[in-house]
Length: 146
Image (cartoon, rainbow, N blue to C red; front, side, top):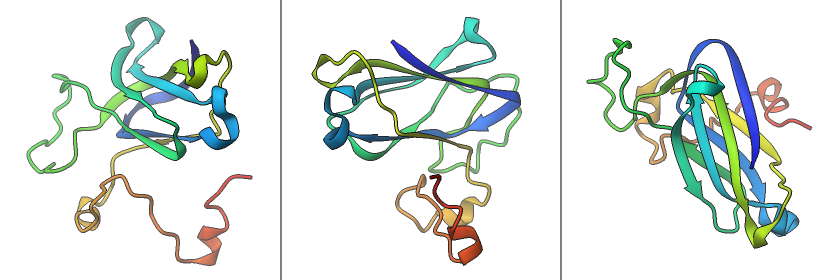
């Protein structure tokens, strides 16, 4: 399987991973089964999410969730609709299979998100993983990568 490995220099909180895929352009190169694993190194990876994709077009949001870590003393009582974030040094995204039994894969973009810093601002939104809307021109010009 193909894999994308993202290393962090210190332990960070990750809430979800987003993949930009397009079945209409890539067809057999489009992933159909994706596994996201997290850990400290390649030897102790734990599956945080596995998702089957059916002809995806656009951003695919993959929320990550692991059993609670006994070493973390986070305050988990006030997290109503949000699962606890995954604390990790390494995120590995494995492409297990492609559409039409393809051999190669195209992933157009990957975004890794941490938990929302201000949870009260996100409570009005139905989707807790919605992207922020940039209002100022100085911010909106950096909203996409060319």
